[in-house]
Length: 351
Image (tube, rainbow, N blue to C red; front, side, top):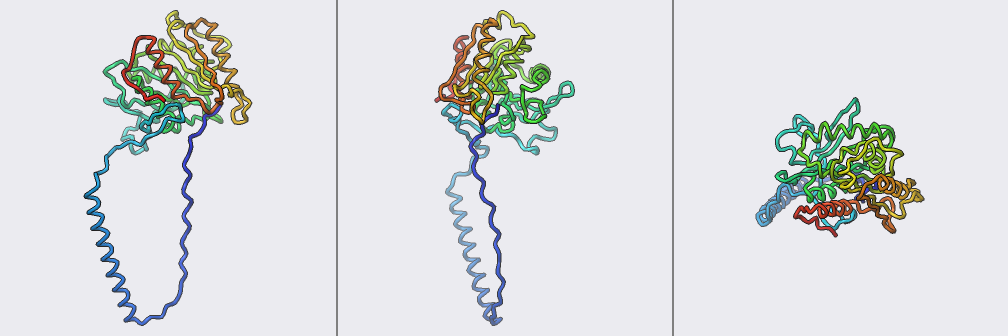
């Protein structure tokens, strides 16, 4: 259960060292000084000409725009749009008190590498809130990464696209990292412990720091993250999602039994959607997890549990690495808003 990596630019090869060969040249001292003087004069004239040309050229060029964001194409994640890159700050950019200090204006900006400890267990999380309109109700999307935590470590890729979709629906995007530190970083191993940490993060930190419209709470997870949602969060912590729903990508198996009981409102109102590739059946040596079987199991389990809005989409010709997860998020959020008679009044530019 791993996430595909982005295309990476190749690095420049290391520059070869230049070697100088020593030799002996016999010159008359007077001739040497004459030549040296001529060379020096030519160098000075050339430098003056270059400086003058640079000044003239600079006067004709528009000044650079400060703070112009780098952009990312979301095409590979299912949407034809370019979005600002959400990039982790360097340590010196986080200020004297670090990133965890929450004060006036913090809810309107992106915050990375925040730390949260619960019952002796510590891990990190990102909150992407840039551009959200706090004069209107603000929802939340929790994104649970696949095995290895690549999405958490590299938010400048698909997380940037997910954040833009969330922003267009006036929601913040929260990307926690599993507390697991043994081997690969996974959500599904020690899932009860990981779920308890996640629950405390939501209740003790995020709901205290942000004025969230809890009727629009969304869980979305990929692969191992989907497994935690299907087997643990919806089964034993469904009260964390009083309204909204869950999107389970490339996995999402149901539990053996549930430890919490949904309300009648949750059974009727929560939207639970599974999305998986037809080829994601565990036969690929790169992805031996049977995500197709897990998604089918989770879909059947929650449908039998009495949830009204349960859906499964199996995509032909798609494997574990090709799900258009950004487009899926936008489509499910849009469908939920339309069903509720709501609307953000903003287009994400879906392709």
